[in-house]
Length: 306
Image (cartoon, rainbow, N blue to C red; front, side, top):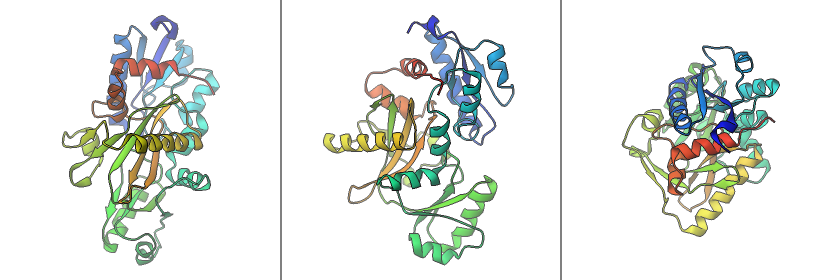
């Protein structure tokens, strides 16, 4: 497509979620890239403007660079559907399911795909029983947040109440506990029907938290990931299957870990991945010779309604 074919494009950024800061970074990068490609692109922050203005102001399509609730949960996708404005990424169903880690897991398990053992936590739970069920260490996190917000690695039973409090109350969410996978973390960027080269993530002390994701320089992103090609191909196929099984399409990212035996364990799907200087999909795209600007243009070409 020629830049003029896209018409007036809104880059949705910011929003009201806990990931607003990262979304502003992602959206600013996307906006700059699209303008560099001569696309008539404009920033649009749903936290500051009514979405109905998109229709009134003649926007022809939207690049969704929102993260977390209100951006990846199907709500903005539904609003754009009603207005008939094409948008990037997964549709309403895939967006809603993918942000819900608990329901994603249930769908994967029903489809025979591997994901760590887990349970939903409640304030009255017997913490010793939780630890006995899932083993220690374990992970506690909000079921509907991204960017590792509210995540705690629990190594002793005494840490469970505070981990639950952080996930359930600070982030006003269902608290999900899952067995810890002791091994390297990988991510698979998906662009249409193509799975980009896998990236191995090596964070300091294995702590790939919010700070290390977006603001530190200590985390290493290895692409090529170092796995034998046959194994990488199988993991890419698993990632695409996991992505499609929860109803996702367009573009996104699937995160998983390998245990000591080399078995993969699916963690989550991101339907509007970060597009910052530290973000993973742009790194994987560069590995196949695709610039950040070309990546943004390719994602925009996939904008759809329904």
